[in-house]
Length: 314
Image (cartoon, rainbow, N blue to C red; front, side, top):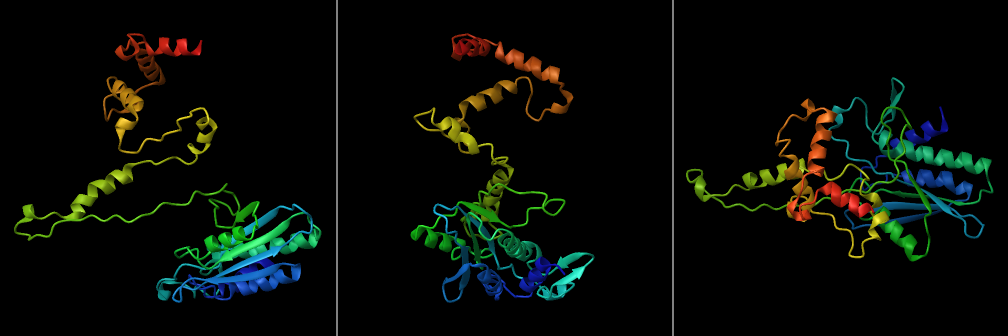
């Protein structure tokens, strides 16, 4: 059995339903300490939600050395009904060449890979140039308020800087290790309260059902494509050209993006709403483009958009 698999099975055997760590971080610290890591445990959170965090660092003696941190979590989501499992979720089981158990994918196998990779690297390069660190928490699957955030704030307070960070969350699509994601932007969540008016079923016109009120709003939110990834990320490359700042229109506020709405209105004169665009060839679309660009516009002093654009380039 490989060292990585053996350690992964050790970690899976620790019941660590968030915010419990189940002893995982002690196992990892015991492997790192002989390599010269200084291991610091930070316990935080209210009495009913105690979180265990581990900050372990092998500090380079070289001045100005960069720090590479491996970040992850030892907690797992609840198992759900145990009788729905083929095997005990905290008894690592191999079937058909795969490892089963709660946390096998997210992310105790990754933690095991962290540790054994560090062991191999330090053995091969005992006098490596930079510092290596591990930041682990048992509060990732929960509210995530007493875990990584707390450790990072503590590090900032004492002037410790993380120059590079590798997060071992599973990202593979088809084959193990086939993808590395360059950061994530997190998520946005909130609570929506929709108030109605109580009433009697015999007099529905006197009542207001909040479900009926919420449905159109939810449908509109679900229909919005907020973005396709990072297309807005490099906006800072042009932001400095506009002293008044760069403004992104709010979804559902067409008056904030008049040029787009006006162009849509013009295009619909040739391509009515709900038209089947698949019947139009590239030649058809170029013809419509030419008609729009060579059409005199009152707002342009009866010049065509093409004329204005050409003049602007001179």
